[in-house]
Length: 247
Image (cartoon, rainbow, N blue to C red; front, side, top):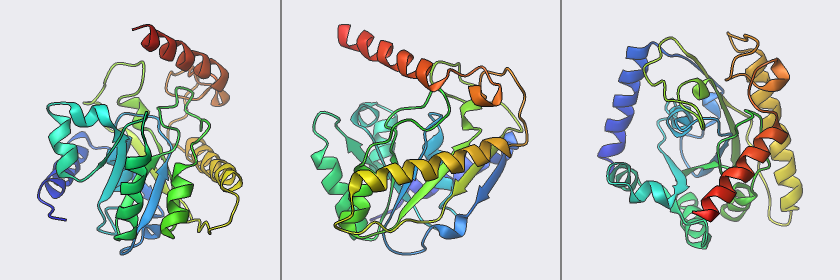
């Protein structure tokens, strides 16, 4: 693939990281393979997560092709950027095409990024995850690498105003040990195990984060924060979905 825009976007992002003095801590970057396909499956706490998950692959000099909802590609600004970086549009009413393209990309040696929760977690814990990442890694016979990001929610997340000029924010990107799902394995069982791994990774990042103040909105409830509990978050998600259906 011809790469003209993606390197420029990365350079711009790195410049912004420096200007904002973001304290980015990438753990396990060496686990991203320098060649060959792989699925990076991440948690989702911010609208900016794709930037930071992609940055987790920077040390290995890899470009991540993210799966994202088709509406992003329809936008007059983000659409051309997403297409030029060869990301993968997902039509949730007909996802087979996106899945097939992702598998083809993996077999061609690309890295594909997936947010397995599908939507941002309001509780800042791991929601139920979809099995697509496991299925793709299994079919393409590539490693499945769990990634967790933490701190990005402080800059821009669901239900909160943007704070894109906030300085000195600690950001943790943890690239976990890869899984190697094999054909014939129970997909549901592997997916459940993946969720456990991701939950453990995220909790470790949250508990070791440089700032753990009680009562702040960006901290999960189990650490004394004011974020919704998983049950409350599920109710908010259901209400939002119903509102969309009503138009």
